[in-house]
Image (tube, rainbow, N blue to C red; front, side, top):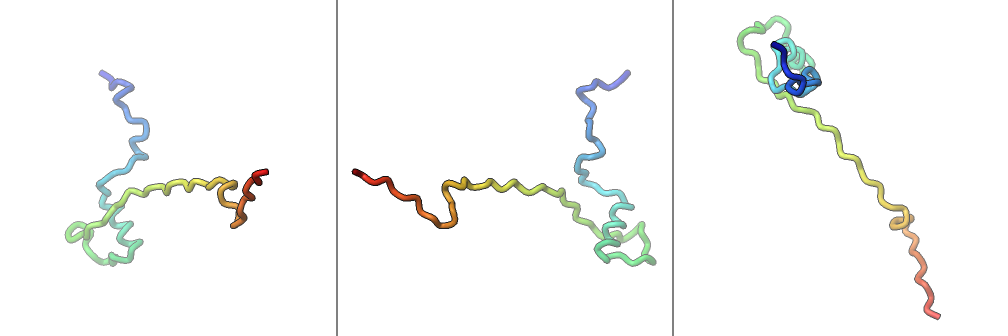
Length: 79
């Protein structure tokens, strides 16, 4: 029996995982210089905070009419 298409996840390998494998934890500890090569990787492995990276929000551009380098718009004359 096969799994329905609606139940399959398309990006199962691309999504954020909360749990890292032992190899990923050791790699991250080596990058942070918190692990020496001679230590036992089975017992006493320190915890590693794995945060999901979030893309920054896009900055909205202000309208050029509102902010023109300090120039004031002339008021219409009442004649």
